[in-house]
Image (cartoon, rainbow over all chains, first blue to last red):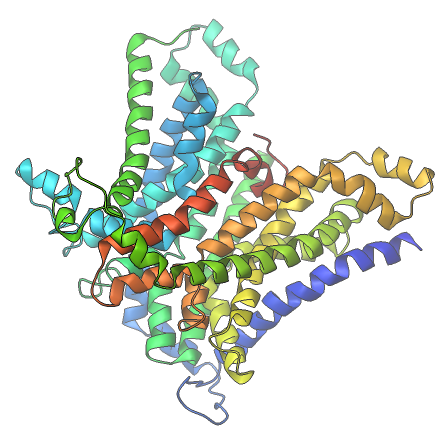
Length: 286
Length: 271
């Protein structure tokens, strides 16, 4: 048996299955996005060309969901970077009960997101929740799911569950940094803050960029927390993209327009990836 | 060099705060699952006689059947992904089989928004009269578990020295035998980590399950979400159901955390 035959034989099942579960559905979604397919109507759907895309681009509610998602991702991932970096730095020096501490602090990222959403829904509930009650005894009255607050509460839930992911990647990055530049800086009498800003962070930058990118792309898909807590409310304040598309497709049965919206999101995701890769390439060259 | 005292104090305080923040919601849910509805009105009640009423309700409510369906979906998805993925990942890692396109496809599929793929799965399921069964859910879960598992394994295979299989072929093994009997055992720990991670991803998914099988074939996250809308809100029972969903994957995760970074980075970073 030749090498070529062997490696084709090995990779063919993978490619075939991949085309079946990703490639074909993706192409089919492309087709759906150019039809007026409705889940409720029988008979062949009509081709409408780019009509769905034109409608999506002119749809204020879609762009509202877009802005909501961008704000959510910005707040959540921003906090996750800051807190994650602090915890990773602290864990790196932790010696006592090292493995136990790490395992415990990383655990939230493995919990079913819908469960996390429901837990916080009741923990932060106006009447029954422990945290609002505790705040009330301190004289603070804060409605976590009220107007103006709900989106930040959702972002906080994201921070609770996904800061561990940041910690995991940044800790690995920190531990793979060579010791020499750090030691040299210290011998030269640099302060801890200076070493962090001028030596550690630049060396950590590649890992940091990848971690932020992965988190942003994942946070864009937020659905479970919205579904568990606010269902898009109050008003449409917490309608994120994935939830908005879900509503369009499942509650209003408009699969054609929902698919075109999903493709617009996909376009954004792809351009984010391309820009990020370009940046990284440029950083490597300079 | 040693840190100053303030820095040390700050570090310890930060880790304690993080630990309490992580544990508090989980402990609260565990307590809620053994409280009576009246006791639930007082969230800070810590001394009470535990009641297992909620657990009895949950165990007789079909949650275990939903957990069984979730486990079945996850096992089939992960089983297929590991068999097909390990062969493919080996060919990609060793022979660049499938070219850059295959490798990029595995990475890109991991960031694909589920909203893109879910409607094709739904219409196909309707066309084949498979809606509200586990089959479309398995296909949907394969769309993200297969690329992740393969991506993990490419990294693990690349870490195995080439000399091993060259020696095996000198000893008269065929290429496939060298793969199965010599290389594969080297990456067993990696395969285990990839399998557990893939299982977690499938077990935790709500979106596909909710759309493709919302009714009698509901998987565990869908069944748990049902506590939210059905028959008002039953916090006690819901808490017990949440613990059933959470405990297995969190315990399993303790075994793979060290290999996770290596997997996510495709073998580029070790932890």
